[in-house]
Amino acid sequence: MQYRRRLRSRIIFSFLLFGTLLSGLFAISTLFLQGYLENQLIGTTLKQELDDYLVQLRADPTLVEPFHTRIQGYITRPGDPNQSVSAQIRNLDTGVHEVETAQGFFKAAVRKDSDLWAFLIYDISENQRLTNQLVWSLALVVLAFSLLSLALGLWSSSRVMKPVTDLAERLGMLGEETPSPGLSHFFPDDEVGQLAAALDSYAERLHHLVERDREFNADVSHELRTPLAVISGATELLLAQQDLPEKTRTRVLRIARAARQSTDITTALLHLVRAERGTNEDSRAQNICEIVEKLVHLHEPLLDNKSLNLRVTEEDRVSVIAPESVIAVTVGNLLSNAIRYTAIGEIVCTIGNGRVVVEDTGPGIPENELTHVMDRHYRGEGVSGKGSGLGLAIVKRLCELYGWTMNFKNRKSGGLRAELKFY
Image 1 (spheres, rainbow, N blue to C red):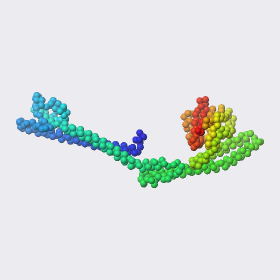
Image 2: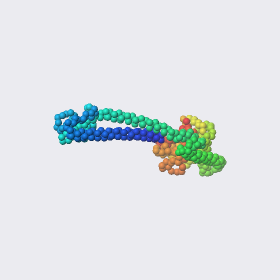
Image 3: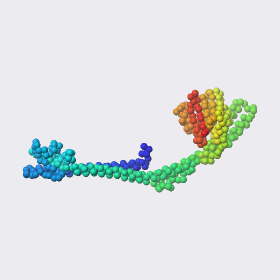
Image 4: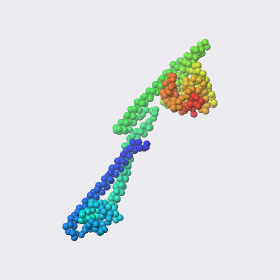
């Protein structure tokens, strides 16, 4: 079915259908006219000959019955035992009939008057043989014209579709990062050329839009690093004071955690922009357990008065070559989501076998929403609280960039299991 939907296939089928129908109609018309004219000519001739002979016979009763090689005439009377005419023909009514007997095909003209029965029989066996030959010949002609139409369709479709195929191939060779070199100058000023010019204009606008978006992300990420560094420095100085009230210290810890999280996000976005531009720098190997423990410490202020326990388990050492900020944003998003939606119980971070697994005792996610949790701006039904649905979307882009995989699955005992697999 896919082949029939192609434009070239439609052209080929159109040529084949048109050629077959046209030649078929021509053959049918030829046979119809041949049969019609033959019947009219033979039938009219036989009827006229029979009428003329009867007129002459009544004028001269001694007139001998006509006899020809292919035409035979017989005169009998009603009830005459003379069986010179076969019963198959003798039983026919007045008129011209086509009869098939053991001897062949015949055209019989019959005239039954009250005193005389006259028969004029014309052998059309040779005509029937020639008609059969004509049928087979026309069938071969139809087949030949159909094959010719198919060949013309193949040739015409290749000529018609060549500019479109060339345009598709050139579009397929365009890179994602480099601007389009232009397509319209490869094609004449026809429909395909106008399409290529429209594609050039669209590609140029799209390239400028993407570049502007990347530059904006890079500029924002770069400019935010300075005020975030000031906030982080100020919180460190405040936390260093020994006489700081406990409530104030808790609030400052919240500020520190938010500043660290914002710094990691801006740094990760900056790495993402650089990687998309092809200027990403190699990073050193990071110890995943150390990063996770820092994240757990930073997220502890989010627990408030919840009866919730955060626990880290390291089964074996996992090291990943990637920026620390990228790993922190990816794992931190899983931790913050688990803390946000788990009211009681525990959250366990298990490190080992090249992955990080975050398991909680929260409500989990409906099965029909598991495949959409990483979609941009997606928020599940019944989800309350703040959030734009961008956190996991950013994590998804980072995972695609570094070749990591993220899986979500509901636990049988209750809660959600999120797995980040590095390799």
